[in-house]
Image (spheres, rainbow, N blue to C red):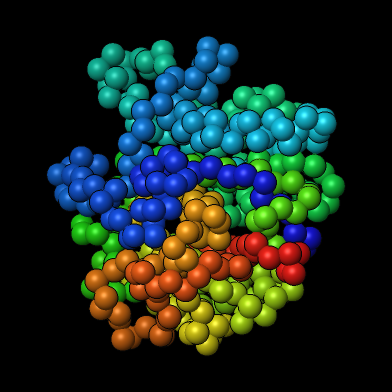
Length: 397
């Protein structure tokens, strides 16, 4: 793989919509954005990472795409729109692609429409069947930007947006596109929260990745968008690695083989040794099986020396958007926003599960500096795994 430049990026999540605020809350392990909620589970308590911003409806031109995920996408794109227009001044529309990851798209629209149908025996005028199509989010953004290059959505559960970003790099490397808008979006809905709860994976307390007291995940919502271009920049995506262990429909391979292979392939494609990774953003869901598997794989590859943390206690697990969101948070740690020189700390109760392979989890106010190379992990149902390596140093490009 050849590195591609990340020329700008934007994030909206429960931590906020401004990168300065998001980084400050990430750096300080601000868990207050995670709110206690019982409305999704019929009175049963959990914590959710809800985006607080209010988004206006889309323009009449895009009325058929008017649902929360796309309104969130539009707001996220607006933050980088000016930079985008500068970058594509001389780029034909057919050389600009859009590829996003999602696992919910507009399914929340159906959830809101069903009670109306139960009463009136017809669907509300605002609801259209195609709202829950995964392709709708990418189609909307492509039409909003008026581009005619390749358009695709990736829906591989929690690895969706990381896989989308790897494909975006591939589109540029193979000369399909000159510019690609990539990332992911997912919104809160009953389908995912009740679905994970039925699997026994939802925690009724704040999630505690790698703690002996961990009970499962909290769910959040987010959008994160990146502008990829062939020319390298201050921040670059070096490479990604993907694997599919296909061990079980929802449980990871307990040996961590698929995760290990995925991370190793990312290093190989980036032409780096494990010792050259400064920081590893863990998938770190706080479920019993995922944390056990990931700690084993990371320990085997990095000899438990690499600094690492999970950001899910701060944002919730944003599912199809998680990969892009966590790559964005990691990118903030590599940027000028990181004025205090802190790696992203790991927020939990401090009671590491002694049954897990040891990890070098980061404490608050660590003053480790500004990382030059990071890896971010995203592992999903069915053993669909993706790892991405970013760098801010020209020596790795």
